[in-house]
Image (cartoon, rainbow, N blue to C red):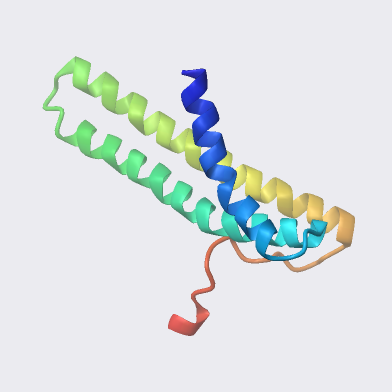
Length: 119
């Protein structure tokens, strides 16, 4: 199990190392790359948590009064809500810290790709 986790960790960080090999290694370049990766990862995680929540709702509706299925569906709904709450709370906390440190009055948009050219 530990070996699988370490392999997953190595595969996750390979893009960072290849990026660093192509350009000069500076702390700004590393943070810019990390920001790019997280801006692609965070919307996927929010979507995944939303799908888990909706899957739980669907299971709850189709349980047909079976107590075991209802209990499982409630658990899935609860975990979906918890995942969404944690992600949105973390985003809000980061924004509060950024506002406190830099004195920025306007909140930046939610993380994710820039969709303005497509709208």
